[in-house]
Length: 265
Image (cartoon, rainbow, N blue to C red; front, side, top):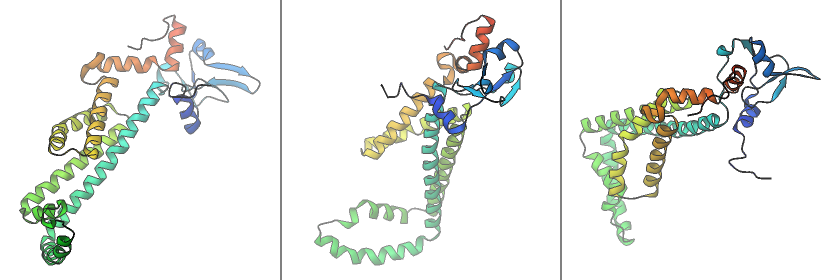
């Protein structure tokens, strides 16, 4: 038996975690296609996985009022979006913590200056014996630059980091809720900082920078292509047609009206 990405059923997985979703349309012919008589009574087809579920439906009304349930590829896309959202949440929280740290440092710089002046000379003899140029190491140079920066400069840096962190959290929220505005914010926000990431890579290549850059490029390409943003591949109208075309209820309604399945352009 083949087990792999193609054999994985996102709809069944989601129903197993969250339960089935059934609906009784008031249109008799459509209701007949979505129901079946079993030994346990009338069963209704789950709008997500297509299984027949005994018992009363979760909702009823005109077919046009039925919930648009994500299924199949749409569920896979939702899973990817929420993975991206988690990454944005983590990054945003780290940036907020960094902004707070810069703010606190700016307010207690004199104390840190005294510690730096007292302990650096003490450590220098040991560093000389180990053959380490303590003054040129990354952390010491970074602290030294920060200590000589103006208060106003550090304030602006903390505000900038805070704003970037807030942007990451906004992106994460929109992606987690699977909102189209969140996809646009994520693409625009990520693209703005790509030149900075390229500059950092040209300055020094590290596995962390390469990984972050690759993730951001992949996220932008995936969102623009799969979600048809900025008018690509038919834009929002084509995206809505595709999403409705994958709906079980829409497929059955098209069959009733003789139109076949909806296009998935």
